[in-house]
Image 1 (cartoon, rainbow over the protein chains, first blue to last red):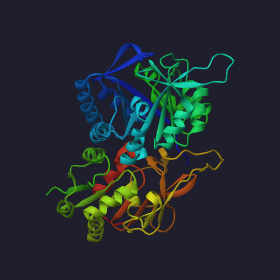
Image 2: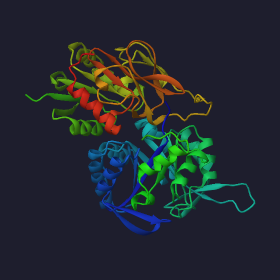
Image 3: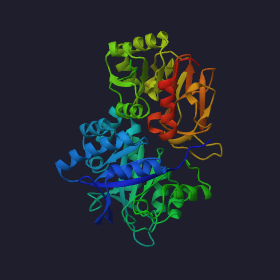
Image 4: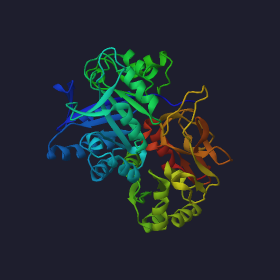
Length: 257
Length: 213
C-alpha cells in the first residue's frame, strides 16, 4: 500500500473557454471547460486544476458558474486558482464546489493572507502557486526568483525561501511553475523542483514544460514531485492520462490505475 | 414515500460536493441542513467536515450537534461520518492544542508528525494528500468495491488502527484507520465524494444500507 503520485491536467480558462498559451502568449482554443473536465474525470485524472486567467469582473462571475457546473459532474478533487485575493474569494470558490484554491500574487503582496486563509479554511485547501524563474548566471550556484503577473513582474524573492515561508504560513501544497520551461515542451526544471520539494514538508506539484511522458516520470523521480501537472499534451490529444500512468508505472512509480 | 438523506451543515467545508455526489447515485431527497428538526426527520444522516478540529468542535458544541448526533446514532438510522466528521466521532484529538470530541468511538486522533518516513526510509509529506489504497474489513459498505481500491485522502491527523471497530486500514508511514464502523454508524477518513468510481459506489452502498453490519 502506498500513496499514488498524482497526474493533474490543468485547464487555463479565459472568459469561460479553455485556452493554452505558449509562454503566456499565443493562445489556442481548447474547448468548453466543463466538457474538458468531464473528459479528464472519465480518463482517470487524479485531480483537476482550473486556472482562471480572466481579468474582467464579469469573467469572474462566469468562473464561479463554470466551477459549479464542473463540481456537479466531476467527482475528483478540483483546485481553482487565479484572482484569489481575499477570504471572500476563497469562500465563493469553495461554495461553488472547489476543494482547494490556488493563491499566487496575493500571497506575494500580503503573505499574512495565506496565514489567515489557512486558519480559516484549513491548510488542506490552501495551495500556494509559485512562478519561478532562474536568475543565476552560468557557472553560478543555481538560484530562482519568484515572479508575479503571469511571469512579467520580478519580486526579488528567492523561490526556495518563499516556498518554505509559505508552508510555514499554512500552505497545504505548493504548485510550482517554472517560467523558463512553461510552454516549451522541454520538460520540468528538475533542479528547481527538487530544490523546492526537498525544502518543504508539504506536497509539491511540478508544472511547466511537459512535452512527453518521460518528462512526467522525471518530475517524480528526479524532481521528487508528489504530483505532476500538464496541459497541452493532454488537451491536444498527444497522450491520454492512462498512457501517462502506464508509462510512469513502468518506471516504477506508484500510480492509480 | 421518498426517503430523505440529511447532510449536516455546521459551516465547515464544502457540502456541495457531498450533495452532488449523492444526487448522482441516489433518487432520495438530499438536504444540506443545519436544522436539527430536519436532521431528526431524515432517514439517513451524513456528517462531513473539513478544517481544524478545534473550530469544528466549537461549532458542533455551539449548535448542540454533539447531542443531536448521539441521538441519531442511537435511533438506529444509518449515519456516515466523512474526514473530520469521522475524527470528531473519536474521544479526543491532538489537533488544535488538544480537543475533546464526541466520543462515539474510543481512541485518539494523532498527528502524522514532521519526520514521517516510508517503509524504505524516504521522507513523507504531510498532509497525506492523494489516492491511497484501503484494506477493507468485511462490511456491507464495501460491496462491489475491489479490495485495495484507492480513495482520495487529505489529512494531517489520523485515527489509530486499533480495536474491532476498524473497518478499513491504510498505510502512510504508520498504519491507521481509514474506516470505522459499529452497528448503524460508519465513518471514513477519505473523501468518497471525491474518490470517483469507488467513492460513488460507497455512497450508493450507504444510501441503500439497512444499518446492520
